[in-house]
Amino acid sequence: MSAPGDVPPEILDRLRPICHRLPETYEEPAWIGIRWRIRARTVAHVYIPTPDRFPIYAPFVVDGEPPVVLTFRVLVEDLLGLTADGFPYFRPDWGHNVAGAILGPHTDWTEIAELVTDSYREMAPKFLAARVPLG
Image 1 (cartoon, rainbow, N blue to C red):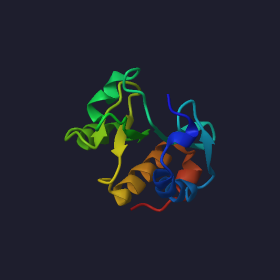
Image 2 (tube, rainbow, N blue to C red):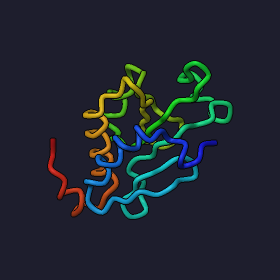
Image 3 (tube, one colour):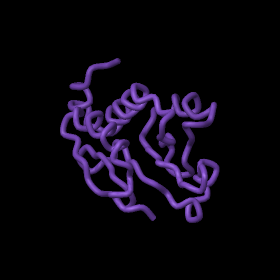
Image 4 (cartoon, rainbow, N blue to C red):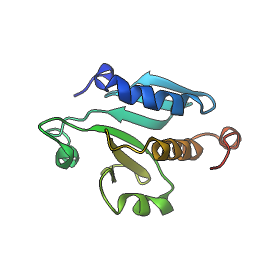
C-alpha cells in the first residue's frame, strides 16, 4: 500500500493548485495517498494502489509499476460518457458516482481541472459550490 509521500511530486504539483483554489478545500493524508476535502467529503483522492490487493488496477500496470490513480465524483448521468472509452478513465467498483483517472505523461491537466471542479460542485454545500464559476 502506498503512503502519502509515494505520490510523485510532479503529480502533486499539478493537483494542488487545482484543489486549493476551490473554496474551503483542504489537503490531508488519506489511508492511501493524499486527498482533498470539503468539510468531511472527499473531492479528489490521488494514490498508488497495490494491484495485487486491488485487482481492478492490474490492467494499468506498466513495466511492473503500479499506476498513479485519481478518483473523484461525477454526475451519475455523465459517468458512462466519461468512462465508456476506457483509458485513462475508468469506473471503480465502489461508489455510485465515482470515476477514476490514470495519471501520467498523457494526462490532460485542463480536463482534470474541470473534473475536479465538477467533483467539488457535487460534494460541497450549495452555497460554496455556487462560488465556483461554471466553465
